[in-house]
Amino acid sequence: SAAPTAAPETGTGVFSKTRAAISARTLRTDRWWVPPLVTAVGLAAFVIYATIRSYVRTAYWVPEYHYLTPFYSPCVSSDCVEGSSHFGAWFGHIPAILPLGFLVLPFLLGFRLTCYYYRKAYYRAVWFSPPACAVAEPHAKYTGETKLPLIIQNAHRYFFYVAVLVSLINTYDAITAFHGKTGGFGFGLGNIVLVGNVVLLWAYTLSCHSCRHIMGGKLKHFSAHPVRYWFWTQISKLNTRHMALAWTTLGTLALTDFYVMLVASDTISDLRFIN
Ligand code: FES
Image (tube, rainbow, N blue to C red):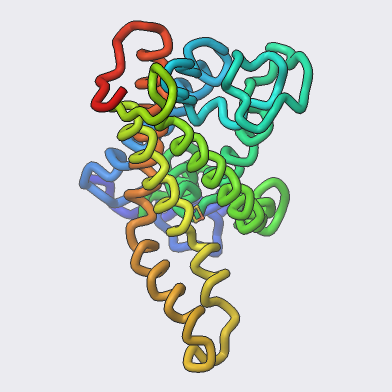
């Protein structure tokens, strides 16, 4: 195992002369690299899947049952297939360089990129700053989140506001999806998938640290603000599950899109309970 020896005084980062003179990058002997590796693989899998699906412009809408994948919601251009523009076509042709969900996808990406949990995840797994507790980062300098680009992390609260709007839109999509083949009310497995996804999206969005602060932050006396205190207490409970919800919703988003894709492309038929 690596024995501590004097580090060169001319080094940078943790090897600079103001730091403890340990030359090994880490003295940990456990498999500390497993969690960041699993995180990196998980994030990469989602990013690859979501990017491909966002650009293909096929199999995102099931006209019989009004299922719309969240990756294309809201669809607001004349390129969107008939019926899928729940809020109208505000734009004409969208060049292929942009996904049809261009209106909100950047905000959703921003919401997750600036999320307190995802920051922990990718600072470790992607940026190695540091890769794990007591494992030295490879970077020479550390300026925290005080300079560009990382100072943008402070805008998380504003991405949260947009994410609430998008959750409302997804809720609307899930409700209009109770549509039968012959019109009127319908109910199939796709509805369970869409509603399950929306419920979990709300849980993730509301468990956000910014949301918790908006509810109960900056108060001097909880006793003087019983309503805000109650909301803060509830959000705090949900907030303890934020990491689990961050991962679960990546999974349900991909799964929901995948299910809509399979039904929309006639690969499988939706299991129908009513109409
Ligand atoms: Fe994760 Fe706000 S902290 S979404």
